[in-house]
Amino acid sequence: MIYDIFQILLWVTAIMLVISGLDDMYMDLLYWIYRKKYKDKMPDFNEMFDKDEKPIAIILGAWKESSVIGRTLSYAVRNLKYNNYRFFVGVYPNDPDTIRIVKEISKKDSRVIACINPQNGPTTKADNLNSLYAGLCEYEKVYGEFEIVLVHDAEDFMHPYALKLYNFLIGYKGYHGVQIPVIPIKSKLGGIFHRTYCDAFAEVHTKDMIVREAMDTFIPFSGTGMGFHRKAIYYLEKNNGLQEGKEVHIDAELTNTYFQNNEEAVKDDILVNDTSYKDDPFESLNAKSYIPPRETPNQIRNYTTVFLSFVLMFVSFLVYTGATESSEQEVIADNKDGNVIENIVNKVSYTDAFANTMANENLNLPENVIRISNSFRDNQYNVNYIVKDGMYNIEESNWNNDEAARNRLSEVQSILGYEKTKGLIIKSTGEDGNIYKVIIGEYGSIDEAREQVSKIKEITEK
Image 1 (cartoon, rainbow, N blue to C red):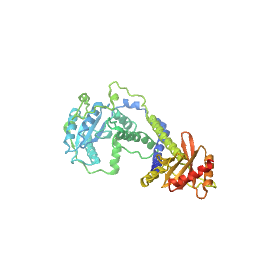
Image 2 (cartoon, one colour; image 1 turned 90 degrees about the vertical axis):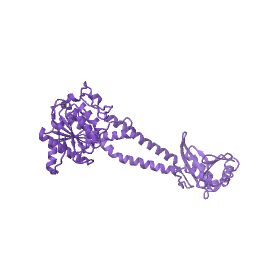
Image 3 (cartoon, rainbow, N blue to C red; image 1 turned 30 degrees about the vertical axis):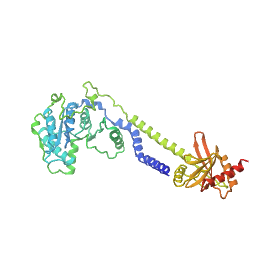
């Protein structure tokens, strides 16, 4: 019974996995169909290194982010291969630790600007970004308009060439919005769960995005790593109505060199509040001798091939296991007319019944009869007595083919009487091939079963 339950659960699980995987297979198929067209539509990204830098504003909300904000900002100002940008960091008056770290970095590089929300935190991310946008608009009144606005999170590592990509696509190719892939960095101690998280992000931000674009369906932004042309934001303001004016405190003392390049000020490492990150995810790109590649290696094909191989192996295993178990459990039972009279679903159930019988019955075994794992062995008559549901079945003989087993069953039933003798043949698969077992009767005790065996042997062995 337990075996039956587990087998049913296995097949139900397998079927559910297949059904839930159909959408993934659909996405994979569309991806491989459209990837060539997608690549052909892409511009030549080598041009982005020669384009003039348009002013970019990066807005970044931070509440209780003192443990990571220093790392994020110091890494960005030290490694971004772009000069004409400004960070607007939204902090809260009741979060002095984050404010202190942002201001310390601001003193080293005036491209980092603290914008203090008029309300104590925490508020919603939307509220914080709206306050940042209000501060950005105040800056633009004095220092000129930004052409590109980016949104990032406090813990992001920005790719050294990310701003050049935004500048190229939004500033020169006419895109109103750009979402670049957001990929989690592998954690040394993250193990399987963190890497599963990484895989999910990689799948969504590469393959799924391409398929969505090919299908002309909705393409979501991620809330980070996204950039917009200033005209797109003006369009939203025009069509959604102006919000109530938001006040924001801008640290004006740090803005006197707003559009000056402070690259000299950040050559040394900026390690604020022990927020340095030893493992640089873009270490090879930050080398001074780095030359951008002409083509980016594509590893998606390899990952997909490995994944599909595992899926095919798993499905093959399920099919093989199911076929094997079915052949082992196939029961062929005939009466004198050759029709099936009984099916035994699972011969392992004999073991449970045998255990129950042993627990509830104190048997005095006849001479030459011994117990084995799930039955009794009669050495005198060379047969087995199998316990099932408190009754005793006789495993009278084993044969290599079905025809011989049927003939033996008919012979035994003719000796004991067709009407009162139940008989069946169990087919099982062993190392030497199929084995056909002749099973006789249902008896209330071993003595009764042994009496029938003696009648059979007395006649057949003459």
